Amino acid sequence: MSLHIVILAAGQGTRMRSELPKVMHRLAGKPLVQHVIDTASTLSPAGMHLVYGHKGEVVKEGVQGSHLHWAHQKEQLGTGHAVAQALPEIPENSQVLVLYGDVPLTSSATLQSFFQLSTGRLGILTVELEDATGYGRIVRNDQGNVVEIVEQKDANEVQRKIREINTGIMSIPAGKLKEWLPKLSNSNAQGEYYLTDVVAMAVADGTEIVTSGPEFLHEVEGVNNRIQLAALERAYQRQIAHQLMINGATLRDPERIDVRGELSTGQDVEIDVNCIFEGEVSIGDRVSIGANCIIRNAQIADDVVIEANSIIEDSVVGESATIGPFARLRPGTELGPKAKIGNFVETKKAKIGEGSKVNHLSYVGDAFVGQKVNVGAGTITCNYDGVNKFQTTIGDNVFVGSNTALVAPVDIAEGATIGAGSTVTKNVDKDQLAIARGKQRNIDGWQRPVKKS
Ligand code: UD1
Ligand code: CA
Image 1 (tube, rainbow, N blue to C red):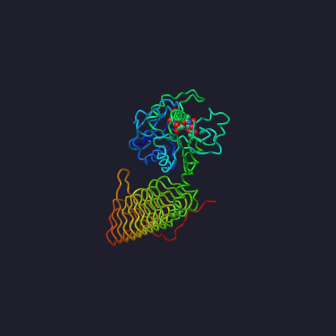
Image 2: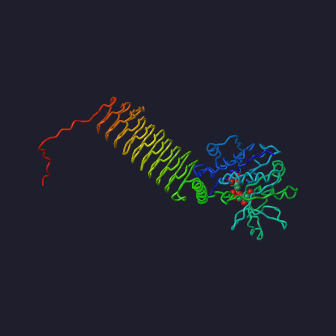
Image 3: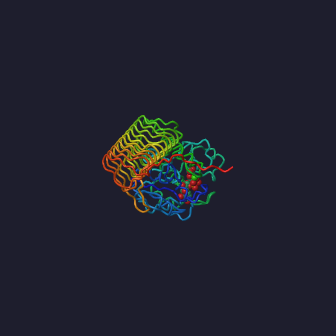
């Protein structure tokens, strides 16, 4: 039986108090509904259907997924009505898995086994809660068989004591849905077409009903307000942190790390508190990362040391390089092995060779720097004339004195030396000394101005 996944995302999410549709709020840097789509994709469904309503354009623009079918629900008349909007696109002989766009952390394994168990039957993913207030209760008979789901607002005193609840994730044969959904009535406490009413219909026509549960409770928790969003963000981050530690990274505080993308770490990596990793980041063995670093789309080789408060973006860092504290590597930075970028140094589109040092207070952009180069404090590559960008090339073993302006385009050949305070506008040949600064004059017996009393 082929699998079709229906993701319900039409609710507007009033309690978020937001311009943004609820499912577009981000968890780990990604919209809630994108988490659901990405996990659902791991089941390789024959079709994936997104039921949208409120601000559909924003949702359409903000999510990615191949073969997504969009089903518009004009008015939010209930979960049964929502599923019905997607049904015309779903072939009769398939199994429909219903997910919620605001329940982001269901694991692929949970969905996989739930789907396997429920194919050809009616499946309900359930959990037992200490406090089941607000949820649909799973009503069972004396034999323990499910007989119906009753919503909180429609439940009697006895039913409200039931602790087993409907997580909302259900699996239903499409053929049955086509039969049952048109028969739903909205004569209930909320005046809605409840998807959950199909359970009693299944009982009536002898369709087998199965239930299973997730491994962790947070897998079925939804987001209705920003407090729940924050709680699920932490649950997610804790899980990532545990995986990093299992893989051999020491986290100074696993509660104070944020991964918004894919982070891979080697062995004996040390990460101090409050670091943020975004996009795709790979980190080699024995790398040490100080507090408050932000690393986005970067490859960090073995034995690199990144000191506190450094920001690295779209960059490649070679073995045993050292960075920071307070360094900023902007896109297109490539550091060779043992290169050193010190405090208050900014680099951009800069290739910096093995063993070269830019230790303090410099800007190196649109530059190629060879090996064993020493760039003194306060060196600036003047790469921009207000319109165009120009390249600076610095050969191996060059020594650039402090407070130097290298006005690009300019080539400094290998072995050259630049005197401190120079403004270099012309190329410098191999092993030359270039000095381009005002000559010093010393005046004897200089009288300073005196204050009149
Ligand atoms: C639903 C279930 C309840 C379950 C609970 C779990 C029904 C009738 N009730 O209740 O048994 O315990 O979820 O959280 O199914 N949605 C639409 N269109 C609509 C209505 C809802 O797309 O017309 C979407 C919402 O955006 C949301 C999901 O469906 O993602 C659930 O809707 P919600 O109103 O939160 O359902 P509950 O009343 O909480
Ligand atoms: Ca809900």
